[in-house]
Structure formats: C-alpha cells, structure tokens
Amino acid sequence: MECDGRIKDLFPDYHLGQLQPEEAEEVRRHLAEHASCREALEEVAEVLDLMPFAVPASAPPPSLKARVLARASEPETMESEAPEPEDPKPDNAPQPVVPARTGGGRWRIFLPAAAGAILVFLTVFAWAAYLGSEQENVRLRAENQRLEKRGGSSLVVVGVEGTGLAPEARGTAVLDPADGTVALDVYNLPATPEGHSYRAWLVAPGGDAYSLGTMKTDDRGDGRMAGRLPKDPTPYETVQVTTEPIGARERAGPVYLESGL
Amino acid sequence: MTISMAARNPEDEMGHARPSDEELMATIVEGQESALEALYDRYGGQSYSLALRILGDREAAEEVVQDAFVAVWRRAETYDPHSGRLYSWLLRITRNRAIDELRRRGISARHPSVGGRSLDSEPDPAQDREVPEAATSAELRSVVGAALDGLPHDQREVLEMAYMRGWSQREISRHTGVPLGTVKTRTRLALKKLRRALEPLRKEPVDLDGV
Image 1 (tube, chains in turn yellow, purple):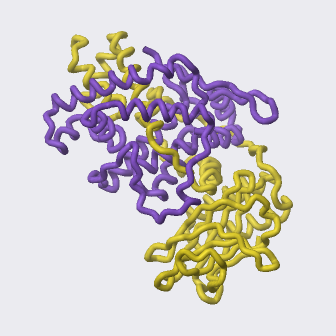
Image 2 (cartoon, chains in turn brown, orange):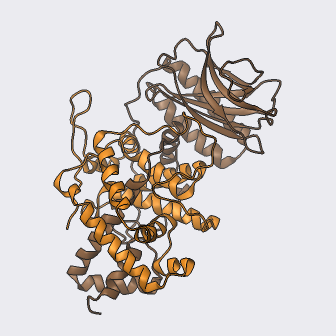
Image 3 (cartoon, one colour):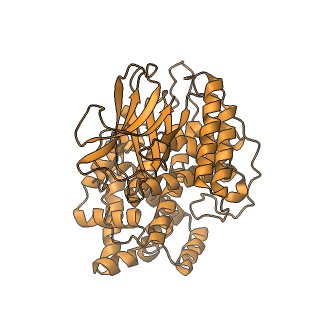
C-alpha cells in the first residue's frame, strides 16, 4: 500500500485501539515498511495523548492512594495479565517477575506509630469481617501488612461503628494529615429524615465539632465523602456522623456512626 | 514535529533534585514501593480526572485508577521510554481501562464534554475542590484547553467522541449520521490544527509534576 491519505486516516483509530483487527494488522504491516508513516503516526499520537489535559482537574479521594498501594502489594495472580494494546512495547514478552517490594518512607508521623498500627489492624480486620468476602479479606490483609510495615506513616485508618440508631452500619475513615484530607466510606446507614442529610464531624472532648462535610447515601445506605482536615487536628478525638437539617452548620442531630481516633 | 514535554527535574522543598519520570520508573522496576507512591503523587490526579470524565462515576473511576497504576507497577520492565513518555503510557492505560468499562456497561449514550462537568453528585466544596496545581501544569492545561477551544465545534466533537467515548470514525459516522469521509476530514483537520496550536509546548519544557 502506498502512503496515501486512506492509510493515514486510520492512524487516530489505530493509536486509540479502535480499528477492526484486520485493519489494525494492515496498518501494522504498512508501518513496518514506511518510516515516514511511523513518524506521522507519532505526531498523531502526541496530539491525542494530550487530550487528558483538556479535562478539568478533579481531586481523587484521599483514600485512593492507599488502595492503589495495597492493590500493588497483592499477589500477582489476582490481576489479569493479558497483554494490553496500550503497552508501548506490545511484544507479548513474558511478564516480569515481580521483585520483592520494599516499603516507602515518606510518610510522616501523625499519631504514635504503635497506636496507629493497632488501629489499622483492628479496623481493617473488622471491615474485612463485615464484608465477608474472601477476596476482600486477602486484599485487606495485604493492605494491613503494608500499612503495619510503614511504622512512621501519617495515614490513619479508623473503623467507625454504628450506634444504637444504626446498629448495622459500619464504615472506614481515612485521615491523611500530610495532605490535610479525610475520606469516609460507610455502609448500611438508614435513610435520612426528610430535609436532612448526613454530616461527618471531628469532635473534641469539650464538645467542639469541626464539620468535614455532608454525605449522601444510596438506597442501600452506602455513601462516601471526602473533606478537609482542620489545620490542627490534634484537639479532636472522635469521628462522628450525624443527621442534620440540610444547610445547618451546627452539630445538633443524633449520632449514627462514631469512633475514637 | 516532535512535541517536547520533557519533565523538568526541579528540587523538592529540601533542595534535593526530584527524580525524573525515567528515574522513577527505574526505581519502580527495582520494586521500590515508595517510587510507585511518588508516581501516584505525580499523576494520580490526572489519571483520576480522566477516568472520572470518561465514566462520570467516582467509584468506577477509582477502580480504573487502581487498575492503571497496578498495571504500570507490574509491567514496569516492559516500559520503553523511547516509545512514549511515562505519563502518556499511564494515561493511555487509564483511558483504555475506562473505555473498556464504559463499553462493558453499555454507556454509549453519554455525551461527555471535555471541557464541561457532568457529575450528578451533590455539590460539596470538599468533594469538588480543584486540585492544587503547579503553575506549569496549569499552563499545560491552559494551552491544551485553548487549543481545543480554538477548533470548530464539529472538529472538536469528533475528537471528543473518539477519545472520550471510544468510538471509531466508522462508529461516529453511524451514530451521528455524518458521512464517514466527512468524519475523516474533520479528524484530520482537527489534529493538524491542534499540532499547530500546541507548538508552544515545543519551546519550553513543561513540569508535569502534580498534575
């Protein structure tokens, strides 16, 4: 095939992996023989690869980093290893042997490391028991082991328990003072009264409360939210979730979830 | 034309040189989890933003980001810096995983806009806060955004449908009723104009850290 417009018009779909197999093979064969078309494809790729930067920035939940690192620590057999088209060197080479992973060392101390490790241990296993999924248990065990190894980690994972108003409710709060963020995932909360929403708080022993933000739940009572920690979180010793009238900024409603820090 | 976006190698707050993408990747190959963490700090936000834009679903976007970083972690040895930049590789994986998920769900009727927001969650300043960005990454967004905004609507639309929805040119033609030849022409013109508009990126290296 000559280097005509027809073959070049296939380059965008080829780069994005959107050609039919026979067309993709045709392009591959052509590229193998035509250096100028390889260059033209590279130019198309460079422009298309910038498309993500036209997307407005959204902040991922603070807990996502911990989950990414936990997933990376899982046994490799749990991950599909089929070759992927996005691989810049799609040569179907054997998967590399994963070397022994070593822990990172950038986390700064927030709570005493020992107390943190105990909290993580209890929280993660309580959560695993709640979920009752063996696969989830494996994942969480790996996460727990990883977090335990990080003696100086600033990441604080706290299990929150339902009060008498929501005995079936559970959740996990992940606080990252280094980033100043907090994420809360909850399950099995009852529906809020009309005109009310759930609101998460940090509460100090004297009763001072800092609002972490509101949270919606779905029809199963599951919800999640992300918020900012106060500049100095040390006076606060409890995480609570209450129901408050929509728009209210004061903590006055009944407590549905609670945990000490 | 080669768009040069060599990541700078600036210093951290302690005055230490921050590792380049290539150095980071070499450390990942050695199995240093701290390097994966650094990679996430550098590109996690961009990966999440892209997945969220394609899927419009926070939970699914988080799954995609996890998949993408784990793929990079486990296949780090297959990364060839001569075949493309690290962020291109990571974001390509992110995009492909998100498109796969979109197809799996059969969400083909969505019309995500590259520049607009389509999230249906309750507005909450904590959730919708903007990611703090380095000036240089904001600059990159500004240049790319302006380049796309400068395209005629029909040209921009074909690129968005191809990239954000995973439609081939043939599928775009079928869904929109626009003749395939016209779709090809619009795509060709759009890419040509974008290349020209993105020319400033050639002149100055862009620090992508923290995007």
